[in-house]
Each structure stands twice: as C-alpha cells, then as structure tokens.
Length: 216
Image (cartoon, rainbow, N blue to C red):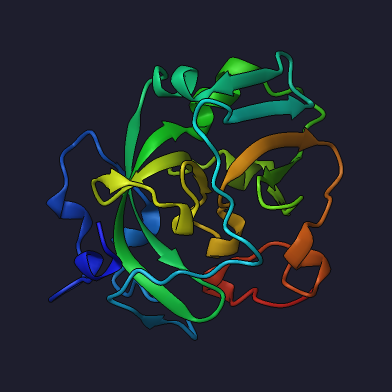
C-alpha cells in the first residue's frame, strides 16, 4: 500500500467509528485532540534516524528481559500466535505534526508483561531497536498503559519497514519517538536510563499535552 493511499480525506476518524472490541486511547475522546504546538497532517509521514533496517522474519526475534520473572525471546511465528488486539489512537510527532485516528493491530504490552512477570523493583523501560543500537526510555506506568501495544499492522495493512515494520512499539500517550520502530528488545530496569534522543537533548518523558519536547 502506498503512502498516498493512507491520505485522510474529510474529518479525522473518531473513536465512535469502531467496534466494541477496539481499545480506544483516552486522548481520542478529547474535545480538542491536537496538543499545543501541533498541527494535524492528513498524510502518513516517514521520519527516522539513520538507516531503515530490513529484518528477515525467519531470523527476527523480540526479547523481554531485565527485571522480569521469566525472560522471553519470541520468534515471529511465536509472536503471531499470541492473543491480538486493535487500538485506535492519535499519533503526535515531536516535529509538530499529529496524525489523528490510527488503527493499530498487534499484541498488547500488558499481554507480554503478564507472560514475563514484572518484578517489584522494575520502574522504567528501555526499548532497543534493530537500528544500530538505538534506544528510548520511559516510565513503566506509561509502558503499561492499556492502549500500548507491539504493532505489526496499521490501518488494516502490514507495517512497512519505513514505519518500523515488521514490528514497532506504540505508546500513544507519549510523543511518537517513544514508540520505538523496529523493536528488538524490551529491558525493564530499576533506574531511569535515557536513550539516544533523550541524551541528545529531547525531553526525558515526552508528554505532548505539556509540550515536553526538549530537556530536562
């Protein structure tokens, strides 16, 4: 599917357009869904740091480790056999565009964390990507939001490599750079550990509604 095919015509999609089994991100219920300093885009922009990795599905793995009771490493086939969810959410890039009304499909973060078992001393998450050691960090509470998922489909189609396929993390309540593309490993840690963009000056938390774009 081409990027042009994902152009949004007319009003932005609303949460009421979806079946009861779709998880609705709380921000899509706001009267004004565009955070301060953001502008709606009707396109599906592509932004990334560095190269776009292309990972063969027969060698792809997702690892959950760190402060968990039962570390996991899943192959693509094993991941596909897990219970699946759909999430309707908005998507806010720190570069000031927002794409409203995205329908993601994949596996809930909570599903995998229940299987791994979160230890009491785990308070933060470091997401690692297949793209040359890229990482991002977030509080465990944000990571465990009911609308957070590991997504392999977007608006009914497989996620392209440019958009983080075959699998990306999606955490709708934070700026989009926290939704790690090409996710390879989730590490639970006791102390916060800033990732690549956070070390380069981006905000350590990244809440779009309070414009946490840069520092501290």
